[in-house]
Amino acid sequence: MKYTLDTNIFIDGFRNEEAQGRVFAFLNRALPFIYLSAVVMQELAAGARTAEAARDVQQGVFEPFERRRRVFAPSSAAFAESGRVLAALAANEGWQMLDDKPSLLNDALIAVSCREQGITLITKDGDFKRLSPFVRGFRYAAPWPSSSASLPRTE
Image (cartoon, rainbow, N blue to C red; front, side, top):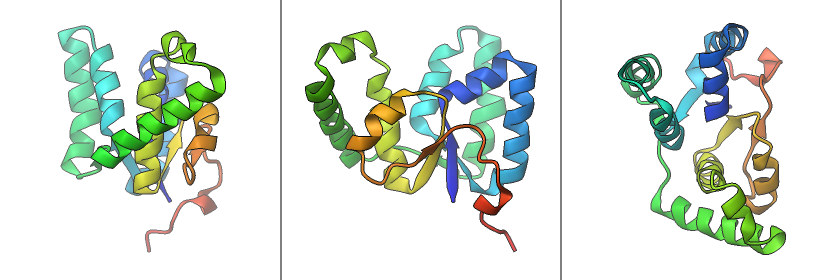
């Protein structure tokens, strides 16, 4: 199984030593199966408000995944599909939901691109539960997939 971490997981790790320990423990256990979403890269870069923070994110997060060619980006089909997903969600919940929660735009794109790549998203964001009925085949999990049996063997 392949995994990617949502932005909220990285942010928790940046802000809290205990959360950082859990992130590193999971990465150590599952590193061969972890990828980085280009959408998450955008969100992390946007949140790096100082030169030091931008450098830390670039060197500590982006570069290791880029070196390993473990970054995935949404295709043009994923952009179109995420728009359809948002339209279906808006029809179901009302159009104001995009005004109330603009992050749903990126969340829909993350969900569709994860499904497209066969990657399971690790997140604490409840919006993916709202999106999942509209993205068939999308998988997400709460931190942290606990069983090492759920990770592929590297033998």
